[in-house]
Length: 461
Image (cartoon, rainbow, N blue to C red):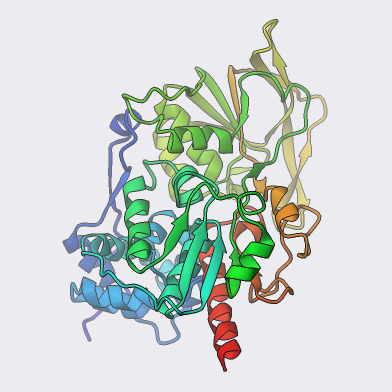
């Protein structure tokens, strides 16, 4: 076995910050082949593979990296395919620093192996291969999947691989869920999502667009026509601040802002899509969605400030996205919280009143609780406020599936195997957890698929 390369972690190629704020092209260009092999050789091939414990879909990380040490992308692809069918997406958007890379032994010497970048290399290699067309047996059991986001696509891929027939019901006019309408083009090009979805179509998956389960199809119809149902409709209902002035013109959710830009292609220079972007934009929140909204507004010409009530140490967004935002000129106003929003005589937002915060004891999330500093209020001039505080499931889900149990925040109650307690119905992803990561949703899709395959197999006996 070759001796591990003990050099420090390699950085991917990226667009220059001054150039990329003028376009929506992908920021990171990943590794070239030589750097891929060099980074792969930093892996120590640990016997107990602690990195795998941080991967929600259980990718055999040392095994696929061992293939890349020899430049064998095909072998690495076969290893990864046992756990995920979406490596080009995972490699780009997963918060690896809080998952697999967090447990990498190399953190103590030179930095964690760039597992996400290596997975991206394999995913991009897969996209160059021609899809293999196949189709399930027309008499095979059928599975209905509600929602075509990461949980739904993952569940569909595993069910198709097991020989089941799959139909995905998608409410929007384009498949992909948050991968399509939520994550900006510069972070996850839509062509990549389209290629990954095309693989499922070539495996025989049927996708019904503009299908709102509960309206266009009823639960009774799904139960009649399908042997199992997986609900993965996401969490598209935005949360707001509930402060004075939130209904002023120029105040919107990050969901609305990003959906307009992504689905309606407002990022294209020749687009006629109506998209408002102010000159002084304030984004409230510091998660991945907040970073996406801030960096998108920057590309649309705004001077952007992120307002966040905790300190930098508590920022929940991916470290890479925070770094990229700062490089692009996004300003961070930390330990600051909005208390009201003001407007002019036309009803247009023109200011936000904030208060300084200090950190107290940790709360239920494990982060230190922000406490207002009395008498520290001040105003920020702004003509556009974007609220990025998380989301919850659409209330229509309760009406569509009245037999299920729901938590107070509107999420579906499901056990560790994604089972809802109602025979034949599983649920996973943000519709169960609330706003979470793409990879955690994929993990839920895998768990649900395994249980669905087992359930159908037992019914056939």
